[in-house]
Image (tube, rainbow, N blue to C red; front, side, top):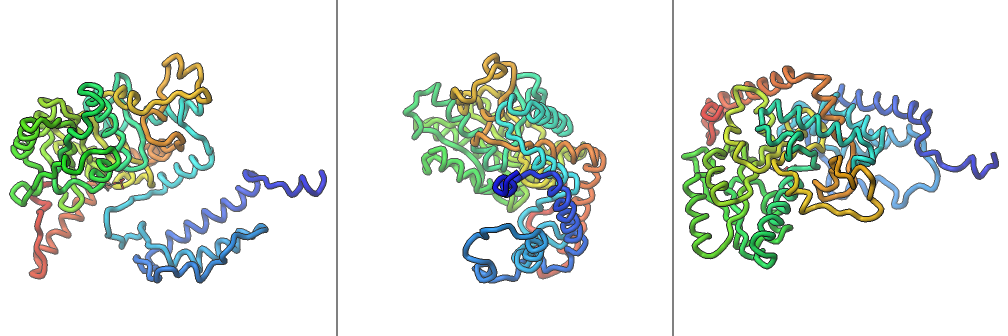
Length: 414
Ligand SMILES: *Cc1c(COP(=O)(O)O)cnc(C)c1O
C-alpha cells in the first residue's frame, strides 16, 4: 500500500470503535455516577462556548483523550442535567440503560428504514413493538397492524399531530373540493399543547378557524363536550366545515384529561377526525387502575403517546397509532423511480416513509424493544406507580404549606 491509500479515512474501523467505544461508555458511566455533583441548571452565560473553542475545524485528527477532556472542561459546564434525579423542569425525558443501549445498537447498525426493503427487520420490529404496546394500553383492535390500522414511531408529538392533520385535511378536501381549505375548522381546548397551533399554521388552517375552547377549574380544566357541540353547531350554521378535534389526556400546564367518549360522539357524528394527544400521561394507562383515563379511545381516529417522556425510552420515540393507514399513505406517499422495488410494488409490505414527513428514518424500535425486554411490563408499571405515589406525597407536602395553593388536586384525578 502506498502512503496515500494508508491515509484514507476508515470511518467504521472496528478496532477503533472497540477502543474508543469502551472509553466512551466508561466516560458516560462515570458521568452518571457523579451526575448529582453538578448544578442541575447550567450556569454559563450566552456565547460562553465561542470563547472556548477555535473558530475553524481541525485539519488533522485529534485524539479521543483530547476530545473527552474538552467535553469534561468545556461542554459539561454548558449542559443542563436532564437525567439528574434533581431535575424537575418541563417534563421528564426519562432515559434508561436499556433505552440508551437500544439507541447505541441503532447507531451501530446505521441503517435507513424508510422502505421495508431497506431493512426488513426495522419495519417489522416497529410493527411488532407498536402492537405490543397497543396491547399493553388495551387499545382497540383497529389500532393493531393486522387490519387496516397500525402504529408508527415519529420523532415527536408535534410530528405525530402534523401527520394526522395532513391526512385529515387530505380526506376532507377530497370530499368537499380542494378549494375549501379556508372553510376547515379545528377544535381544541385552551389547555392543548402549542404544538397543535403550530401544526395548524403549517397545514394552512385559517387562524380564525382554530377554535380554542375555554376550560376552568370546575372540570379540572378538561374540555366540556357541551361547549364543543355549541361551537360545531355555530360553525356549521356559518357554512364552515368542522373537520378536526384534538383532545388531550394529560395536558401540559394542568394535567387535564379530556372526556374522550363524549367528545368522540360529537366528532363521529360530524365526520371529524378525532386525535388524542397523550404524550406523557398515556404511559400510565398500561396500569389497569389508570386505563380508564383513555376510555372512549375507541371513538378516535388516532392516538399518540411519547415513549421518550415517561416510558424510559431515550429521545426520540413518539408513538402514533391510526385506525386507517390508507388515510396516511394517501396523503403522504410518493413513488419515484429510484425508490421502486418488488415488495413495495406488489403491495406486500408497509413502507413507513409514507407514514411520516421525512424520507430517512432510523431503527428507533430497537430502543423501545430493549426497554420492554430488559425491564418487562410489570417493572414498568411499578415504575409509573411509584412516580404517582411520589407525586401524591409531594402534593401533601405542598398543601400543608400556606405559601402555596394546589390548583388541580392529584387526589381528585387519580
Ligand atoms: C410534551 C408534550 C407535547 C410536545 O411534545 P414534542 O414531542 O416535544 O413535540 C405535546 N403535547 C403534550 C400533552 C405534551 O406533554
